[in-house]
Image 1 (cartoon, rainbow, N blue to C red):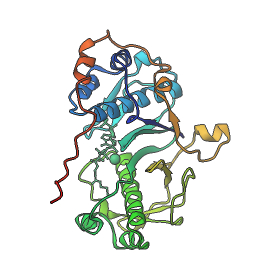
Image 2: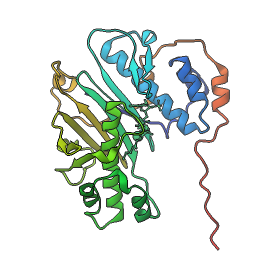
Image 3: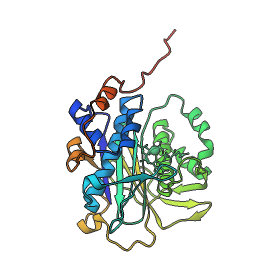
Length: 286
Ligand code: COA
Ligand code: MG
């Protein structure tokens, strides 16, 4: 398993860097990235594409320029090239991080969520009541601290999303059909937890594994269905068990990148004036 993270919020691309990034991705993705209103969303999507291309070049040794990515009808990116061996991969972005997980075995889904502070937690939970099962709500409410309840909420959310993303079914999947049971009550910073189990419609699915991480105020879950897997994955080769996410820098992302097209000044001109993120409007206190 490969697990990489990139902090796109602290990335301040220079003109030449952003133009080069635009040259390293497929045209339709460049156009999509150009349409985002805020810089943070453009950077998140760019980081996702660069992570995918790096993982494919690294794992399957396809020359960077020849990597051709497609999307399923539901939007899940996949490799179009026919190659020897296989690689399942998925990316997610939220909060400060874009993350990628990739494996030679199984079917991967990944989800990251920042532990956002919320003003009215009971109200928020009320709007989400249908997404979680009764045992899951009991798990969320086990702690009396709202901050801990939110952490468990985001953990369960990431678990559900990672599974839905591995299936690739996208929005519309009835996530209340999924019931997760913890064996480790709280995630620990920089420790990989791998003992949470899943029931779908009341049936236990032991072939699914969930690697859970908490890092820098974010929760990250990698779902994998390893049924019928025969090949050795990266971590087994290196003899390292369940490594945590490795944080990459922009130079790492661009290390093996090469250009698919000519430089496009407009790609920068459209990006540069954008705001990083929406302004938060607070009601003036009376
Ligand atoms: N399956 C798997 N991966 C997909 C996908 C799909 N159908 N569609 C897109 N992706 C990939 C893409 O790489 C995408 O990046 P991009 O937008 O830059 O192209 C990335 O996943 C987005 O993942 P993430 O950052 O985690 O986005 P999200 O959490 O906002 O949305 C969806 C994830 C779009 C895949 C979809 O699962 C969704 O909308 N889920 C919500 C369903 C829900 O009800 N969840 C409740 C959980 S309690
Ligand atoms: Mg998500």
